[in-house]
Image (cartoon, rainbow, N blue to C red):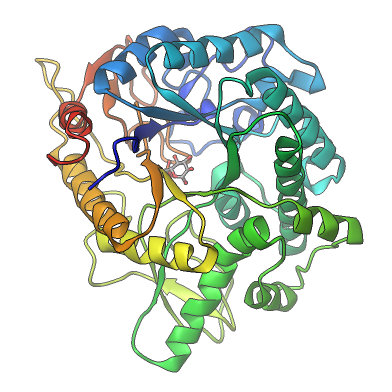
Length: 453
Ligand code: BG6
């Protein structure tokens, strides 16, 4: 049973959905200047949500969303560190439209799209980016704080760190990567403190990608490998946000990689004093690992392939089916993952992403029969309901994605939305919106508060 105020929602991120990459004073972000894979679209037009904002919110309202989780583009709001009134107006319009339609705005302040000007000054590797982020967030809290009650700091900081080459074209040494990661952790703590010291009474927290890690067989070595991977991929990020400290097993891996960052006493103080109110997390599937003594470090993508010699190697789980893009599907894993998070941290949870990327087909009559997506979401919602009945408190569920958008590294042919956007990777067509079968299915599910799946 879902509580009557359960937030049935859906998610997007600015650079993947908005387009208008250089319009109305926006500066490019790292996503606009990076080399995207040759066979996929760039992010310049995306779903052109910037120019369809009212039409899109009307569709979200028809879908019945109680919440919409989106990100704000730093480079639109504060290009080159200067407030851009037109960029700010865009988010006022979006948020006002949502509120008019009784849709709770859930805002992520940073989702993979650092302004290019900051990147050129060293990006997250430069300590000054912490203050730039604090200034940006202070402005957001002051400007939108009366209208927004749920804030998230950084989307999938763990994946930006561990799969950075694919997600943002960041190619560096582990030492540099974990120094950047550390600055992000401090920046996150700092802005949680700023929010808590402001007049606003909403909630703020991180939004990592969390997944349970299974040992590939019942042996102590493989269990240890699973624990190490979980520490490195999951708990490093949540221990920092909830307890304000580094996870010990993760630190051991950082030492082995010669990647322990420089941590000042002031950093430690900031992290310790400023922690989160709730945990938002993205869940797509689980991982399966085996012990791994010798070999090369492998980065993989968000969901598979990570390997650190001496600790763990992630492998395919032979017991799980896969999407056509090779991500395994594990609805019960959601229950396992949520239990692990809640028993470690005891904070309310919010799912900010969960979904299936597939090649949808627009039929001649304007329909899209995405029953594979319905099956995926249905199975996850069934497990979510069981988890809630087990006693784990959930604020809401926001699958990825509200509307079709550009995947991080596989173009728009890998679609996730309830709403189809008529374009392909290299042909913008008319960008017309169509309701998929999953749109009507989710609409009915929300109408019945999750009773009829
Ligand atoms: C998450 C990100 O990693 O997964 C999203 O937060 C992303 O930005 C989503 O789009 C799905 O991944 P992908 O690589 O299929 O786009």
